[in-house]
Length: 244
Image: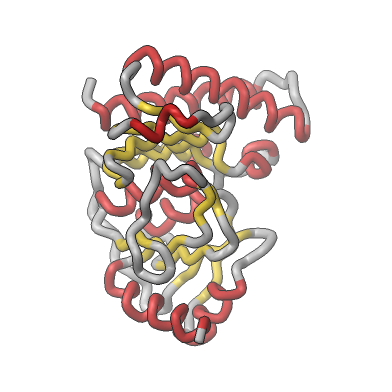
């Protein structure tokens, strides 16, 4: 099984596990999110250690160690991206499985179990035609002020959505043109979405235009831009102007 096939398989199976945990009726509210996180994480971590024992591993739900820092190949996973949405039985949550090589998001898959979909780096699909009015996906509860300002400047429309993976995949799926985030994330929030976005020909970078680099000592990532390539120069320019 290739790395890309493994990433897609693990994301899909973890998604099925999460649906079963939710449908079991054993958990409600926050306990459902915790049960889903722990169960999916256990599966992903054990599977990766079994299938790729020599690679590094970083997961949101496992204690981080310095061991990964010496590795060329590091798997970065988020068992449930959008725990709140998962607990509310919404569709805008995701499972992230990425392989970063020398810090670059090279291979990955993002499962959207609520939609029965897995988007993957080894099977890119053609991007749908962009909307004439650019749509910017933003947080349901705390839209980034920079995204709001850019939307106003470029005449864009805000689309509220749950998890980071769901937002990034909305751009891949043609449901939005721009995902601009400045509220802070961690490596597991964007590694797989960035890999999938890049494989589909989208732009993915920090908001200053610099590349996304993973497997760092500090896993915090302040900002992210994933968008249609034709919008990247304008959005980057507008964000830079906001910072002046």
